[in-house]
Every structure is written in structure tokens, then in C-alpha cells.
Figure 1 (spheres, rainbow, N blue to C red):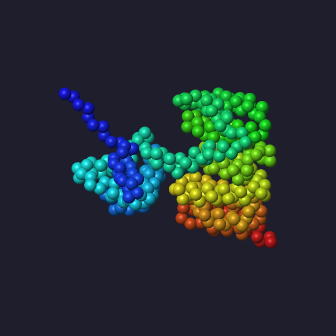
Figure 2: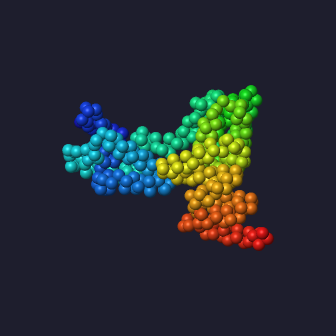
Figure 3: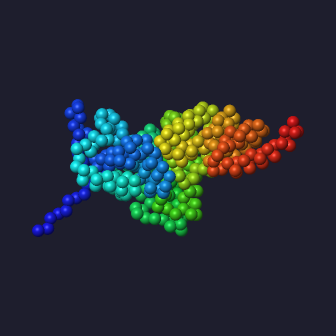
Length: 387
């Protein structure tokens, strides 16, 4: 007689429940079990060592990075949950049969050291990582505060992109025309708060859909840049939106916009800020730089730091040049030369040299920055002699 084979447990399945002293129940999933086993057998109970291992793996391919970030987040939240419950990792597999543990240890290695699991196997903690939370917030997290919600326009915009369709480069022109026609038709009937909601919806929806578009000709990018410029040039005195929320939303979007669509517009945007707006933007950028760095989101953290340097350069905030250059280091050269050239333009020659001196040290672009430093010295030496 044929019998059904037992279904193998998956990560989100319940392994057991532990009754705590206050009679509440602590559910132990197989993900919890595998984390605890891996921690005890491979990392000598050292949470930090296992976390460091996962974070090291985030530097691999984007798929590998997502898997590793998910595992790291699950580990962090499991550690917090066990502490709150007064449990140790060993509590999760206490009294388990040796043969069972042997099989589960092997599975823990395969699942968590080789990242051999699929998207639909992830726990909620693996899905809702700091990256997911921050990017989700950046895309749509502040829309509820808008006088006219971007949600009103987002669905219609998204429907312009056909579901499951990948747009080849030659098809991008037709897509751009559809998007432009939609914007032109809508904005003609909208006041400034309505246009704010329309443009803001566009800035998010296009980013969400760009994985399905080959924009080699740059027509979608050009349209995006035009909409972005229109968005930031709307009269903010006509918009019932607190400046703190407006700039928090906008800066987070710029940090997470990963297609360089706003790069050309950034200098003018920072240059046009009013005296009352500059401190708000500076605070948001500093907060993003620190917060994202602490979360291990180094690329986005450095994006915020780069924009902070651009703000200082465009607003000629010379007192900040040396400290921000020191924080930047030599991992990227453009942002350093930008500061140095801004100082040179204003004939702050010692400051221009000081920018290079503050950043120099081991790093990917150290040699190039040393060369730029030498060129600057040669350029300004004759000017100093004339003084």
C-alpha cells in the first residue's frame, strides 16, 4: 500500500513552543532552531562573530547580499527576542534527540552558510530587513503627509508599465511618450499641491519599475530628471507641507534613487536652498549618513555623505570642508575634488590644499587624489607669489 512521504519542515514551520515563567509561549520556528544550532556548533556561541560572517557575505552579488542581509536581520531580532524571554540559544533545542540534531545541524549549514533557500522560504524578519524598511520608507513612507496624496496618481502611473513586460531599448521611446502624455494631461488641471502629488508619485513609480526597462537611450532618465527639476522648483510657500517632512522625504528618495537620474540636478537644487532651508537639509543628510551606516547600508550612507559635501560646496560653508573631507577619505575622488575646487574658486587656497590633506590615507583613490593635490599646488603657487 502506497503511503504519503512525510513533508520536510521548512524554515517558517513551528518546531516547538516553550512555556515561559509568566506562562506566555515562545514559538520556535525551524529558522530559530537552525540559527541557534549554527551559533553553538560553528561560532562558539558568539553572536557578533556570526553576525560579522553574514555581513561579510553582503559584499557578494545582489542576490547573495539579499540572502545574507535577511539572515543577519533574523539573527539580530532572534537575539533580542531570546534576551527578552530570558532564554539562551541552547534552550531552543534542549532535550532534542541526537539523530534529529545531527540532521538539523547539516541543514543549518546548508541553509545559512550556503544560503540555500528561496524567496518564498524567507521569514518575515528576513524580508523586512533594514534595507527593505529604509527603501520602503524612502519610496512611499511620507505620502500620508502630502496635501494631495501621491497615491491618487501612483496606480495609474504603474499601469502604464504593462505587467510582466520587459521594455527593450527601442521600446523605451514609446514608453516615454505614454508617461509624458499622462503627466501633461494631469498637470494641466492641477494646482501646485496637486502637481506636487503627481510629480512625487512619478518619482517613485518609475524607480519601482526601472528593472523592467532598458533605458540605454536615456529617454526615461531624461524625463525623470525633468520631473525632478519641476518637483523641486514648485513654490514651496504654496504647499501645505512642513519643510522638515518635505526635505526628509526628498533626501531619502535621492539617497535610494539608484539610477543617477537626479545627479545632474543636485548641484542646482542645493545651491537654490534658502538660508532657513539649509540647516534642515544638513540635519537630514547627517542623520541619513549616520543611521544608514549603523545599519550596515554603507553605499547609501556614503551617498548621503557625498550629498552633504555637495551642500557645503554649493552653499560655500567653508568651516565644514575639512571635517567632511576627513570623513570621506579616499574611497571616491570626485567628491573631494569638488570641495577643493569650490575652495579654489573662492580663492581659499589653503583650504583647498587642506581638503586633500584631510582626506589622504589608504584607500581606492589615494593615488589619484595625490596627483590632484600636486596639480593644485602647481596651479596656486604662482598665485601665492603674486600676493
